Image (cartoon, rainbow, N blue to C red):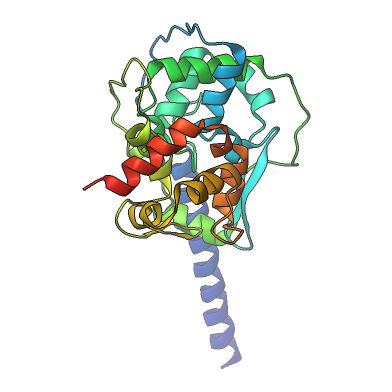
Length: 273
């Protein structure tokens, strides 16, 4: 009898080990999947001042994720630790064309997909704003990493990768896109498509892996112009409420919108049929 029990236990252990190995192999295959997207030539040419180039780059949410020198976006036991890298160290490794591919397609230098990079929104960034982003990135002075280590996956994250349940935005962007040449004078819709729409829907709440984001149309309608400006400048809701991710992103990025741009954004969100 004991021998049978030992055989069964050995078989169970073997099955578990095979399952673990299978999950690891499949997750590594998912992480190493490459995308057939060419790093097309891109001429970085801008007449903007260095200050305006930085302002535009920051409104497009570079700082909210990467901060000054890297930032931990997610650190969940069992799931993993996702790190947005230090741009001051990372950018010099890329050509301008490779940076454009990364930003617009979510495809890294080695052809694999970036995790969390909102490429499906950034695919809408105009050429002149893209030039502004790269101009600003190239101007950054090297800084030591603000956080130690790189992205690491826990067992639950590995299972999600193995089952292809972890979203890669490179899957959502066509290989060939045709962005506008210039940023529109009225940026209301443009701001939604390049930024706000990553976390929010217009008419319904949107559940992401990390949080539930409210619908933007009723929110924009319910805020006065003063309160909406405070929201984008400070990330604070009515009454000074801390809004978590929104507070952080606003303070890093949305605070760089001009008053006119904030008015255009609220008008678009509130009046859209």
